[in-house]
Length: 359
Image (cartoon, rainbow, N blue to C red; front, side, top):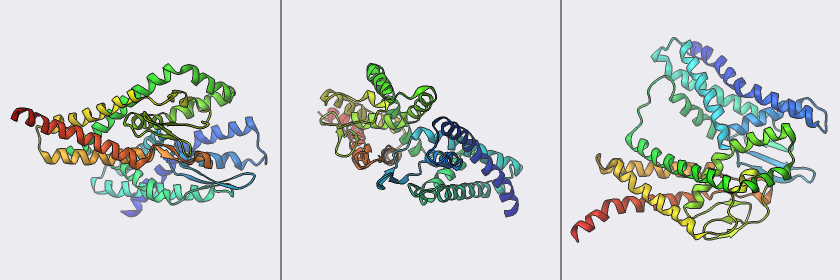
């Protein structure tokens, strides 16, 4: 049985890896041929393709910045890039199960085998692509890629029965992120001249402009998380010692990235109206679960807070240099703000009508 499962899973793991690795290899090779290389080594674009594949799985990098060898860290990676591994993994797991003739007794083993083999490739890619200057943090392949792959694989081959707590908790976070994405889009349009200026400064050219557009699209989810953090009142950072929030505005030089054209020009207390939206979301959570029971409400609230912590962690990190060692939201501040504001909304929805009725 084990031989059959491994025989079905291994080709599909390689296929899923190639599904993302081959296009990135082509892009890296084209960029290398266009821009040239200091060493002229054809292994450079292949190594760069592996780095793109690794970065798409949110595995951070330890850096030694040339020529001085200063330490750096790259962990603020585009959340939008995760869609490609998700599609590749789901397709690979589905084909693995199909090759096993949809045998229900082997489905669980097929998912586990696929996840383990996929993680082993991520480990190998991290080890074999490292150089003296760029070193993927290999253990993230275990603590992040393995559970990520298992989660994607678990949703293939059967209808997943999600608990009511997870269902409503995830919906409320998705609602807040959806509202934040709309607000971010409006802010981007209102500041389109700044976006154009930041693009002009880079002078990317035709091919570089395409890559810059793709990179900005993939970083949009990061910007949406920062938007939610801003309107929750805690704000976000764009570099070490900076803070952009409704009540504080400390900003130094910013990277020439077009998405940053949506940054506010100063502090704005009127943006704290976003706190009321999050409080209202907490009240909405109560209305969704009022016909059920208090246990579902508590479970939904806990799930929402845990998801907020995950989103906050994913939307924060370092961007290569020491000056950009803090980018995005503060995980604990963001989680605490969402927890308090959702909890306040839920408490008001529960106790305010009772208080009014007694009065």
